[in-house]
Amino acid sequence: MVYGFLRTPRWLGLAALALALAAVMVLAGQWQFDRYRERSAINARIDAATTATPTPVGAALPAPPRTPGTAGPPPPAAAQWSLVTMTGRYDRGHEILARGRTVGGRVGFEVLTPLVLAD
Image 1 (cartoon, rainbow, N blue to C red):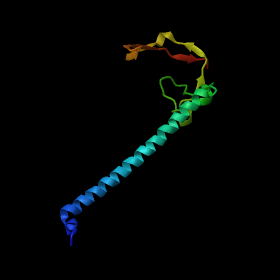
Image 2: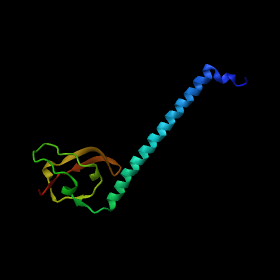
Image 3: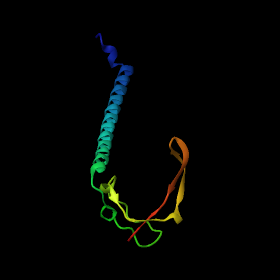
Image 4: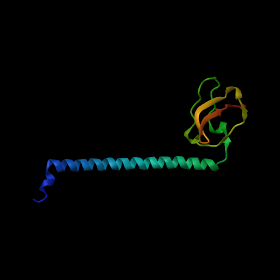
């Protein structure tokens, strides 16, 4: 038989390796496609938010607890990238500096001033 060498352990091992690599490549391609669809959905939400009418923050996010120093419930996934409106006053007494930020191509600070809502 002319192609009898294909039944040797070396060629059978290479064939098994090629099949395993093909399976890995197919799975990697499926993962990339799923990641593409996920990013496309996020980008569509961001694009839709740029043209949406802003809503009051109380309608988009759950109310925080009244106990100082405790975190409130996490926002729903649908609220991500939503435009909101807030009314209040800036609390300059509690400003903080975010160090090591790039501002205008130079390393600098960002000044973060909390907004105290009317309610």
